[in-house]
Amino acid sequence: MTATATEASPTDSYHGFLESLEEADEYAAIDTALGLIDAGVPAERVLLDLIAPAQVEVGERWARNEWSVAQEHAATHISERVVAAVAARAVPRPTRGRVVVACMDGEWHALPPRLVAEVLRLRGWQVTFLGASVPAAHLVSYLHRHDAHAVALACALPMRLPHAHRMIEACRRSDVPVVVGGRGFGHDGRWAHRLGVAWAPDAPAAADLVADERALRRVRPAELSQLADDEYASLAKRRGELIDGALADLRARAPGVREYTTAQLDSTVSDLGHIVDFLAAAVYVDDGSLFIDFVRWLIGILASRGVPASAVGLTLGYYVDELRDFPRAARFLGEASASAAAGTGPRAG
Ligand code: B12
Image (cartoon, rainbow, N blue to C red):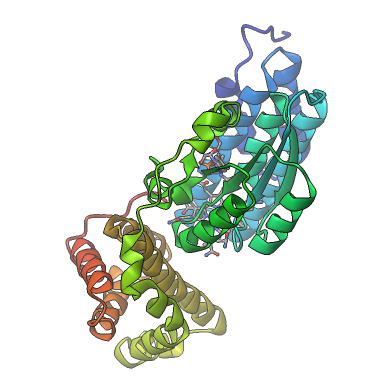
């Protein structure tokens, strides 16, 4: 039976698409997406109602340790190929100005802003997609050479918020309006508001905002008076020492750690780095919930890999002692430890 425009829907194709990602079958995945377009489903819906939710599920399966990193990478690569195939099928000529879309420095989640870039393109904008981890200085020099109507900046990890702020300020100095998005700004954009920048929850909202220059420029000033106390700067400066100290502490107090393989040690160091970076970001935007959510997420990730929550508790305790002269960091650590000890439970990442 041939699907008609009214029958075809990304929701109905979702499970089959996900299966194609699971089997790393890029041909089936591309056929599913292009089949929907051939059946009359707008390309924007295929991007946002098929590929985007499938990628979120890919993340959940990785978080639950059901999929290996390799399976996640394979699935993401296929999703990227599907986005390219969908984009190649719909090639509207640009009728509007240039929008530059980029990831923050240090941010490797390029697929979410790529979806935003394609939606903007479908809506007539001339889009330049700069991809993952764009250094601020390079973005600014690009903006100086190319006349841009707006910049859309992506951040998937809240720990990157201090970098995000620097990039936003750099764009502002070039007088190019900025819209930001991605889960790194919080589900309701609360941390974008703290940084004093326009935020969009999804690609269609970003497209609406970009089309309304006055709204894009009408932003409340940043609420960052807390930076005056220098806590963030001191934490950032002590990053290496804090990670080394926490590892030595774990080795001394959790005997199993002494038997860790190199790979286990690497991921422990990476986790310790994330703890410091998320804590520093929480201090930067003065919001303990950023750190508490992260600790819950970390406990969930480690639990699914057989590491008990008490390991996180040990490190939080170590940092409470080390950072007793940092009032806000100490408070956030205390709240996160209490929430971890109460077993408030992991939340999906
Ligand atoms: C693929 C993937 C990766 C790939 C990215 C490759 C690529 N080309 O993008 C790689 C392997 C690099 C990666 C690395 C990591 N990842 Co990752 N990743 C993902 C995954 C599975 C999918 C991302 C995606 O495509 N999402 C689909 C999009 C559509 O969803 P979305 O973000 O909600 O996007 C919508 C809106 O947010 C908004 N939006 C998004 N961006 C933008 C931008 C602008 C300008 C605007 C206006 C709007 C907007 O519009 C979108 C569509 O409407 C997510 C899971 C997830 N839930 O997203 C994890 C996830 C984001 N990753 C995670 C983590 C932890 C990591 C690592 C730290 C893992 C590690 N230990 O190394 C590293 C960090 C790397 C770095 N420094 O950036 C966690 C983050 C958890 C947290 N507490 O913050 C997640 C949530 C996984 C999980 N469930 O735990 N990752």
